[in-house]
Image (cartoon, rainbow, N blue to C red; front, side, top):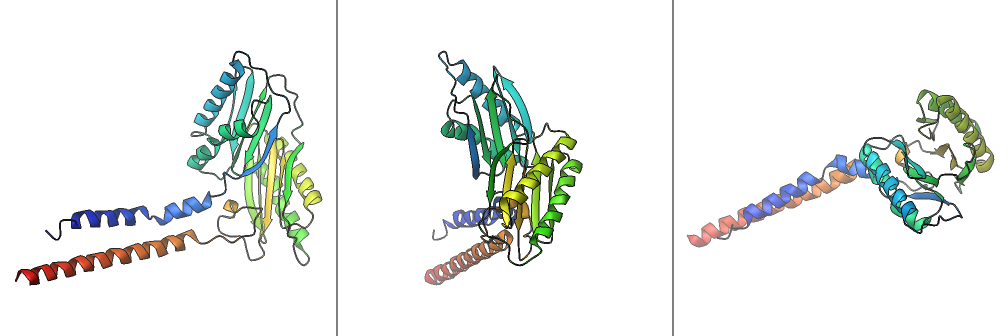
Length: 292
């Protein structure tokens, strides 16, 4: 009778050990920043909706965009008189793209309400919509920029960053809208909206680069979002971490090795399991001794 619970204890330990998968920790760490809000853009005009038609169209549009995010990283659709789109960062997995996009309708309603046009930009994706007749803006217009508060020490940073920028200007053309690379500890990323042609994409990224150089000076990190493209860069004095695109460009905090962390947890769980098995074995011996 003393061992009636043994079949329950060991399966629970096995479940614990099975779920502590190092790859799960790595995936979670790599995508941990994609849902961070970068900026919002809301029209000052709200639409009148006496019969609820605009709200229904907007809700249907959001539903279509979210459902399509399981299949692609860019999609544009129209519902009634409202046109909208979403785009995910080129290095996101399909699951992370969906998780990112699925947050946007709620955020749009919360941050902008029922406006005639809105754009919500997260670090990993964005969604925008506009009511028919809303005035178009230039694809080169700057929507948002941010520059790190720390500047690069010593000389040569400008040259290194300039070379990295030149790689990305050409890379987005060859990569058909997305490119990321590093050069001498400078990590850069660029992406254009999915319906922008290669030539226009290269021109847009070049314009974003010029704005970054002019606006951010020697800041070690920065992001520039134009209407049709964005670029992001960060300088790592000690070397670009593995999977540099998953690190926040606005922060200099270090990121722990997820594989090492998982190994420590696995080792601890295995030690607990071994201790419990020894305890059960000792109880079994004591039970037999008492019976005798």
